Image 1: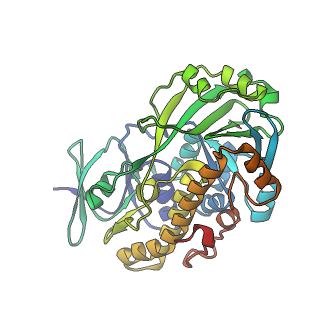
Image 2: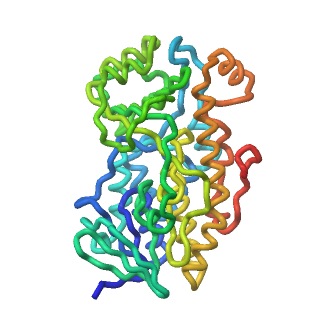
Amino acid sequence: MPSSCRIAIVGGGLAGLAAANALQTFGIKAEVFETAPALGEIGAAVNVSPQAVKALQAIGVGDKIAAVGNTSPGIYTRNMQTGEFLELNDRQKAAARYGAPYYTFHRADLLDALASGIDSSSVHLGHRLTGIEERANANVLTFANGTQVEAEYVIAADGVRSVIRQALYGTDNPTYTGQMVWRALLNGSTVPEDVLEPTGHIQWVGPGCHLLAYYIRGKKLVNIVTQEDTDKWVEEGWSTRGDCDEMRASFPNPEPRLAKLLSVVTECSKWGLFTRPLTQNWGRGRIQLVGDAAHAMLPNAGQGACQAFEDSYILARWLEASRDPAEAFANFRRIRVPRVHGVQRLSIANARFKHMRDSAAQKASIAAGKSSVHGSSDWVWGYDLIRDWDKEPSVPATYAA
């Protein structure tokens, strides 16, 4: 006979642990089931913008994330070939305006902060989900280790390749975008200081590509993440080993600071970017998807993890407010889908502008205040989800359906 619980969270990554913390904050018990034998987030770094920081503060981990995050002073953008200054996204002014900082983290540090707030007895490791059976009054989860769990309600936080999403929607799979990412993590002492001046958070943009480099863990590490348009097929996955010379060749004729940075890369990984059409396939009945399982998005607005944190807080508020969790799930989707779809559209638009082939037109548009390599983020960062968790947020017409 399967064991039982009221709410099961499938997935112990950032989205799943944030959901567990949020539910706990509002007195709701949940059990977390994670595939890996130990909690650990693959990947190097993650950015969290002010509205998502407020969500994390509201679920009780504010002090913990402040202890391990870098407060970003702002992204300083240069032309990739000339080194010419294009734009400063001043995040200190943004922090003052929105009432919370903009943090950069090593993903493992952020995950540890989230894990530390949860009763370890409620986290079940080594549980790889293989199937879910929907019943009238419960869902039966089957795991590869032979365990079965009967959960009245399920929160699916099992990522872009969600087993639960596949069970619910079949062929609703991510599709390749024709863009790929390189990532490298460097010892901060190997990177000449002038490379990351003046803010320690530098972006280079060029025709069909861009590259970001910034400090994490103080100045102990430098995270590099890139994105480029390509006609080559690249597999999805954080851990596909890359060739450093191939990475450097992706950025021809780099300006001197960028050339210095690329020259000290000794290990890198690569993967293809995948996304889904914007749909309302976020769950049904007793099952609710959150994070990448619900709304995988391109990284160009820095909102992948942030939208998962918004999900967690708002879902917990609805569960607290409603006697019927299925009704809470439906209300959650009603509130969240329009906003998240808007953020997904912003991410797509940002990639197009960053990768403009006409650098002169790009520069002129920025100088005239018509466009930004960051898009229009005021409506994203300025969202007061603590006050307006039960109201459908406004989305600019540019990014609305």
